[in-house]
Picture 1 (tube, rainbow over the protein chains, first blue to last red):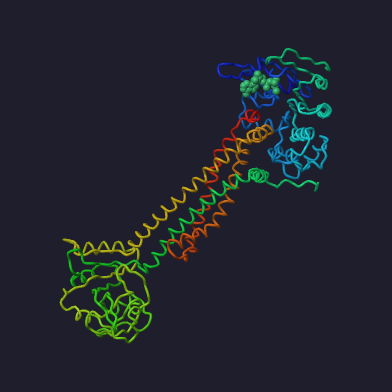
Picture 2 (spheres, helix red, strand yellow):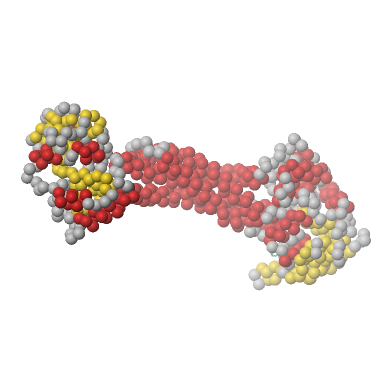
Length: 231
Length: 387
Ligand SMILES: Nc1ncnc2c1ncn2[C@@H]1O[C@H](COP(=O)(O)OP(=O)(O)O)[C@@H](O)[C@H]1O
Ligand SMILES: [Mg+2]
């Protein structure tokens, strides 16, 4: 499948807690094509975050193969994985996960600093991402704790877009937001997807799943249902 | 665009400063440790150095002379032995000296003095005149040291009584400090003829011979040749190289300095541990932040750089403050122990401050190394999960 951007084969993740073995993922096969908008649903503890972290190369499988853009990630070193994340993947978290010591705009600039973009170019890009994420410029110099939840998540989205990723991964991005704000965040992700970015979102909310073209349902670390309603 | 201040061109410096400010008290305490350590090292170094300089100052100009004494059990160096000395090569001049101790009297006061009998030419080589002139051979004149002149209130032309004979003071010497072959400051110099009249009953021969070598590089070889020539059968003379004495004194004081610096280093070591501790706390607190940064593309090197930058900033700032305060510390220990501080600004003392500052920075970096390494090696997911 040449146009598959994410390809998981028989991926298992086992956590050992004392004598207990927990199968967070159990033999998951999944292919996501470039430009897809995928939602992952399932009860708490079903392995949604674990799956997303595999795709995001934050975690490596106990068994099975994860391919991103055709590359088997198990062959990469720690720093190579970092580079892969930096250049290809944008993360959005439930707790926003902004750096508190940096201002809003500096948070957006951070990934560009890691990819060694020069100061003027990254400031310009950060300002345009502010715009794109519906953030007012006047908040640029605010610290994260001076912003509302919705504003923080917009900053996080702007940060996720900093290095023009091909994949956006969002783990319950609306979980800490009210319904209205949550919907606007989903609209933003839909927007990005319409411009060609692959978006994978973990959510509890059935209504949010309607933004996507594919929904994956997890239970006890296994995919028990995959639907492509809008295909 | 100008609504937004541009982040300082080096984010690592800026971020480090902000993180240090986050825990001002903790940062200041860690810095104080380094400051104290730098002051301790520098002041101890300055103290050791000042001790050395003050001793070297009172030693006077020892130079690289060879002094030949009669060995233990021998009373004098004979005329024959002096002739033997002349056969050794590479010698510039040889000054045989007669010496004894006698009571010197002037007016109602008296004091003990070293009486040296030697030729005018020899005296000219060994000491410097403050006023007057050197001895005329065959005269009953004397040249006296600065301290003797001061203690007995002697002037040029005064008549000094030494062992019941009177000598006219024709020259007074410059103060020269404690010497290894001669002690000129309290001495009375007279001609060998006058000396022999004063001490008729003692054995013929000299009490010491000073040998000056043509080239400093030959001092050791010449000393060896003298030993070889004169101590053929048994040890009749003792050969001393004054330069080597100076060197061993120097060695002793270097050891003292090193010891004192060692004591100072302990406080810097403690400071290094406190940096380690503070940085370790900081990495723990910022585990999640590290995870986020790694998730969005910070390599291990970049995380390492971030944490090392903090250690560097504390280290440089605290060490420089410590360096400045070291002048005060050096002043205090010098006043307390040496009762003077004139050696504080000697270049060799300043070197100890430079060394103290350098050690301070190095210690901070060493203390930051492990926490930074630990932070850089955190796995992003473990770090992200951390609450
Ligand atoms: N680091 C870990 N150590 C042990 N167990 C873990 C760890 N991470 C996740 N798990 C377990 O794996 C399962 C799946 O977790 P997760 O993927 O976070 O679920 P979800 O995001 O769907 O709520 C859960 O049972 C969880 O307790
Ligand atoms: Mg989860």
